[in-house]
Length: 493
Image 1 (cartoon, rainbow, N blue to C red):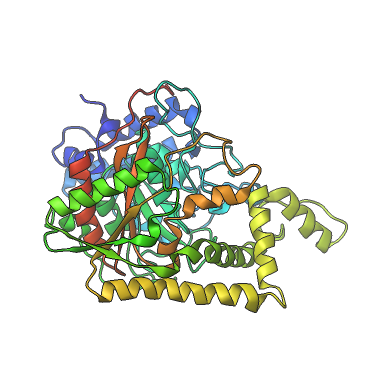
Image 2: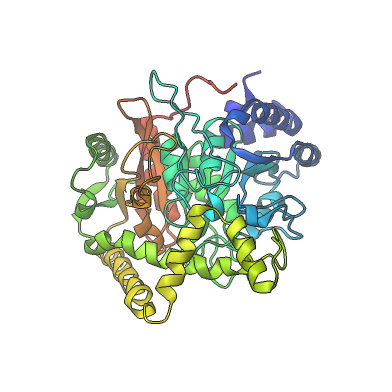
């Protein structure tokens, strides 16, 4: 039998239906792979007994012909999603050994459709980071290495555990979240596919909040088709989330392979940054050529407010984070440090429980929301956000179907290489991705090539609101032209 962990989600689904193997066999293969790959630190909690119980139930359903869309398929869950009865920490000390008595809507829909949970995946603390180096459980290691080098690389962040686990065949697909690029950047760094859906497409209920007006759940998978299948189960209206949109969820898989002939693809001139990495620029041109060859029309467009996106994002996101993280005070759940009175207990708990990056963002956020600075910073950043959205609206009104850009300014970098002396250096990794969150649009990252050191590089497609189907159609064109990028050489075990 072929190595079951190397199958794509859709191949595994079809194999289960054809009775080529059982859900228990598929799950056991993944449990064994996870155990051998602990050097990657992708999982912060493994749940093998739970997974085998779910797999046995799936085998019973498959035997009766009652299979759900994800029946028996082993997945990894980012540690930001509340899982009933299973520890959820957002990879922060401050949540301690928090075991939620409830299930997030997104993960609940995956179990409804028959999926199997292998465990909880590592992420940057409270999803604040671009490299998965801020986790209280330590950094995730990218399964990719530079040619001829053993230097450990970051998998990107904040969904680094999700991307690394998918790339290393430690799950068939994974849940992730994206506030400023946290699905698309790790996907690009690991040769996997990731989609941030339109804001409101997936429920945020039961996901630990970072910045509520920017956060959105989405999948990371091995292929465009796998992400399409995952998103159909993850998406949908939820009355418990007031930002969740009451719209029918399309069968995204049907969009994969659809013709893109006649589609207009916008190429924003503002993304051609001074000093843009030559390999990234060449890859972008290659993507343009592939879409053109498939019958799409390429149009240069202007998104003039792009240059303000990063500074505006780093005002809006920390402001919302400082508000959201006020609830972690040592009173109701999680870590509690002693103090002489309640004020000192709050201070001691938050000082001990939050990591450096989270403290930095809480302080920035509290500052920009404070009296005298609120209008100068937060209100102005929200006005800039409106202008960023208007740029995209005008492009789409002019007939553009999607926008093609690079996903990241570079390939994966070494652990500890960036941000230690200057945090802004790390923030610049989000340069191509934050506009999508600021405008609430869907964005898809697809691997498209390797750099000169043998590391994967990705392209990003940005769509109209609630038009993820067009992104899947275009993403499939790139995937078919570029091929897939599985990790070569399993050095970790």
